[in-house]
Amino acid sequence: MIATPSVEEFQGLYGPFQVSELVLQRIWLKAAFDTSRMKDDEGRAVELIHSGDWNRLAGPDFRNATISIGGERISGDVEIHFSARDWRGHGHGENPNFDNVVLHVVLYPLKPDDPPTKAQSGEKIPTVSLLDLLWYDLEEYASEDSIVESTGVSLESAVEFLYGRSAEYCRRLLSEKARERWTIKCGFARKRIERLGWEGACHTKALEILGYSENRIPMLRVAAAVSFEEFRLDPPRLESLYEIGGDMWTTLGSRPANYPRLRLEQYLNWVRENPDWPNDLEKWASKLSVCDPSASPSTSAFRREVDMPRLKRELGASVCSTRVGGSRIDTLICDGFLPLVSAQAEVPLFNLWFHWNVGDAPEGAISSLRKLSVLESRRFPRANGWVQGLLKLRAAHEDRSS
Image 1 (cartoon, one colour):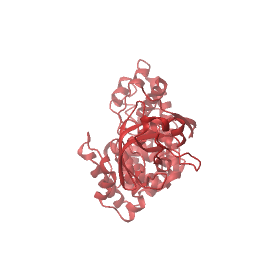
Image 2 (cartoon, one colour; image 1 turned 135 degrees about the vertical axis):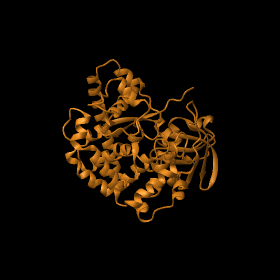
Image 3 (cartoon, one colour; image 1 turned 90 degrees about the vertical axis):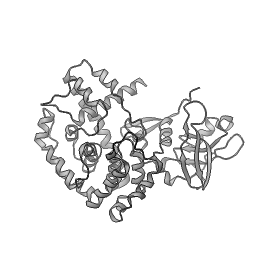
Image 4 (cartoon, helix red, strand yellow; image 1 turned 180 degrees about the vertical axis):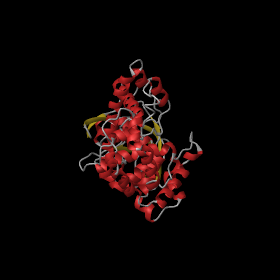
């Protein structure tokens, strides 16, 4: 029997949005939160050693988890809910299938009148709340390219929808979808700045992007554990940073240049050589108000008009101290810098973001755009916006099919 996950509605950036309990389960599975500050309802430190085996059938959400509570190592099952009251509401206290649950994980903080979580035997089960431990708002965790979603992206549904249509239609639709994605990215960036401050938001996003898809979560652990101020005033040792990620680091499928130690060292050198880089990013951004003219007839024309190669050279030297190069600096600019500076300075930068060079695109994205005749060497070379539009269109079709 397959379990049916609960769904709750929240107020998001652009109105109400629904989140399935599956999002909370993915957050727990990937330990995608600040585990170092986790405490149970009695104030005891809780260490997550092994998330457990994700159970998509009836019964507890995770089997065979290993945790430590107040220094005592415990193995058993874990159940995930939005609120503490859901345990009793779902009848788990009378269900023998939940007798081996050793931890109740909920989103919301416990209220004084919440009933204690108890097994059928009457034994109290420790409860932890995730809300104050999350790195992002729940809406961002639930987005189509969040750190808890699968890193494998199939563009098949989007390409299938566009196949056979004119190049002009494809470009128009992908431009519309890219603008939707840009608006969402800027909204998330604005909330991140509000929560972490400008330097904290820059620091967190830079480390996350340097982690690539495989190591974003351990990089976020590093950002949460060691502030930008600490990096700047008392640079930590490389090995101490690596230890923060624990056994979450992965080198599977990575080229040597992407190994986590090398990326951590890269950021250490970046901050060492430019300890004021977030402020320099703001200064670089102050020149961009004239770099977003009304829609140009083509990507090539836009790039000539704003002298994009010069902008990239200036940023690489003045902000990143030439420590980031290749496609990674384009990803850093598109996914990190431009949404952040647009939110901070309230500068319209959609066209610059759209026509910027493609960073680390999903496999098959460029060949799909060629197949659809969207790309044209003289006027429409590969650009970030076309890939972003494909990703948004894919997400829209997946939402519809589910």
